[in-house]
Amino acid sequence: RRARARKVLSLVVRHSLPIRPSISRMEAVMMQSPASPASQNLVANTEKRLACGTIAAYSAPRMPFSAIDLLIRPARITVYRDALGMTIAAQAMIVSLCKSADFLLGFMLGKLSDATRTRWGRRKPFIALCSPVFMICTLLLGSPGWFFSRPHSADGNSTVTTVSEACAALVDSSNRSSCVELKACIDAAVASSTLRPWNATDGNADGVAAAAPASLSAYFGVLYFLWYLSGWTSSLIPYDALGMELTSDYHERARLFGVKTAFQFMGYLLQIGVGLGVSLAFETDVLMQVRLQAVAYSALLGLCFALLLRSVAERPLRPPKHAPLPMVPAVRQLLANGPYRQYLVFKVPMTIASLLPANLIIDYIKYSMRIEDFNATYYVAFAIVLLCVFGAIPLLISAARRWGKKEVLATTCVVEALLFAVAFAIPPGAMADGPLYILCACVGFGMAASYVLPDALLADIIDYDELHTGLRSEGLYTVVESNLQQYAEIVGGVVPSLVAYFAGFQSLGGCSCGCGAKCDADYLRWSCPADVGYACTDGFGATLLYGEPDRAAPCTVQPEGVQWSFRVFFLAVPAACYLLAAIPAWKLPISSHSHRAIVAQLRAREAAEAAAARPAACSEAAEAVAGGAE
Image 1 (cartoon, one colour):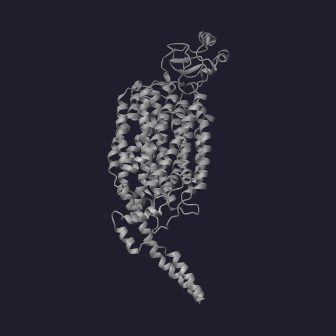
Image 2: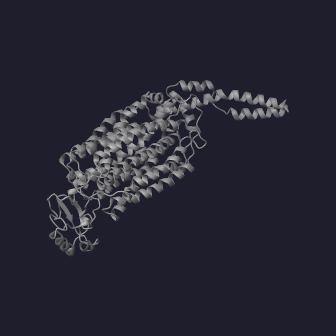
Image 3: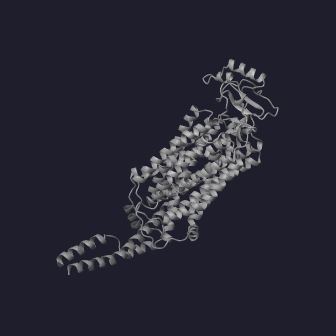
């Protein structure tokens, strides 16, 4: 029995005390300011590379998320504001209220996610519960046409109620250039006062845009709040925090977030391709375009999240040494992190600079450049941006490995500032085709840098925070990131909208339909108070039957102050923000070398704590074995 007991005890000791540096050596490593080469080698040997399947499964949901973002963000303009008639001021106030309410909920969610402990992990349960709600909200938010339509006149009547059935039957959608019989029918209807003359200015209510019902604002407000809460807060915050926990290696994080960014822009490219296809199929019906895409992307998001929940395992966490802090002390501790404060100094203006062009590109194309078929120009411009993003991602990862993440990021900010400043100096009418697309190609590189590098820098800062506090707080840091995005959205969406409102903005230039908002009659390109666009069909480019055939669509006309507001917020403000972000980005204190020292000290601390705990465990095991032997 004694021999058997000695054999069992030797096995316990052998498996409990693996070969490792001594405790005194670990304590010495923790006290060093740069890590020693030996400790850096220890970090390199203990941190494994992530499997390609794990990286792909984690990154996949970012693709439909991005497609949904790029769908709903313009839909606020094209569907709710232009097609359904919601006022620009009402929408701006609803967006700001939704984001303000979601701000506090986001902090609570991040704190709750950090404190959660289940057998499935602390991030995946939130994703599993909240992502289905997000998919339902996306479907309903993208399909208001099921419940609402735009009133076309102040008295409730529309042109379609007075049009001759004979004229409507003469429309040939395949022939946009010649329609002699249709013109003769419209001439007769105008002569008999059944239809308005194309240039009538007699105060007739037909063609005047009417106010949208209050129920539309309520519908948009409730769904938009739930959409943000269930998706960008309750699903995306745990999702981003999960990515920061998958690896602590400096270069492996750059690889992980590089692939994630590639999937993100694949989602943007997917939306551009699908959006261009449905815009060609339903050229003048933006409600149908958005509805079809909302159904497709919601289903794709469900499949991608199912893959993540099945294939990505959360890393086991060490039991916390301290009880979690309450909300206010936790936030104060977060802001006491010096590198993080400096990170915020460059992150805030960079976030504003990246969001403003995305939010305002449609208004700039439609109302500053005065392009009726704005969707085609928008999709082509964004496709160029995304193709350049894909080309830039591997270059940025390689450059970050060679020169450092913060150096590459600061240089990119300076270049972007110069490009936007030059574009602002060019008149909007001269931006068509060549200059606009050249700007988009250059902007793509800057967008890639703003998505790839800050996330990897934040993960390094969280490691520094753990070194000082002993706690991993990815959820709380991710909440601040998400709320930064939301409040940048207020600057990028609400403030320009309010400025445009006070400058005299009118949805569709005061017209009741046109420029993507479908008219009731198939021979109308637009219907405005002083200009009715009678044409062979309702398609863009169809031959106008009256007036100057090449005249600009009145649904693209806005006061000069509105045009200048879109131009300034689209180009001048991003140039200033990129320039403001460059200096603090360059001065960030965590480099590749210092991060290796941070991780080495964390590993040393873990090993020292384990070494201090194991002798007591081994002593208890030996006593148990000896007792059994006796």
